[in-house]
Length: 231
Image: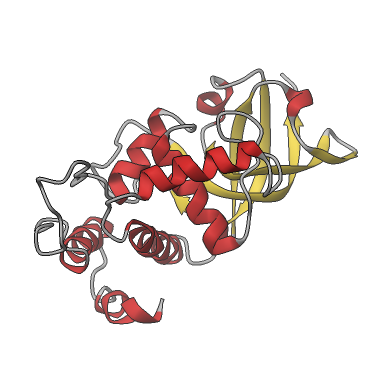
């Protein structure tokens, strides 16, 4: 991101990921006035003041419930930046003219209302994730990740291939894990796929101390060649 190039350039001397993460937290606080929201225009007496609605709150909301208002903000951000319409939020999401899509947009709008450049914060988070992926694993273009899912027949299967492989159209944002056993606990079907690094928004340990008990990768959706594992 050209707007933040100076920040990323400043990270080059730091070899420790924890040091870079600390710099990122400081940068987000100063760039978006997260510790001085009054200077960003927050009115604490407003009927709907939301001082804690920052990028971390969105991540926590997703981890708690992938159909939450925070999750709608994240899915809306993916749609806005990558052109991928959500396929599921509190139920299947239909066409742009459907009631289900309007309900999704309402949830997204409620999540964004009276927040501080929230989608711009997510832009920087994505850029930060991509920077750290390249810095920590410079030669890795894809990551083998697992996803536990229920109701195999409800998946949007576009083609079936040999060796239990399938072409799926996944929701525009999804949770995956690098731990097979952890993923298997979340559904009766276990999938594995090679996720391009460019499609990862969050990975465990990206920010030390943030969501320490979670093992989830947040992965931008679309078409994936997945293998359905049989135990």
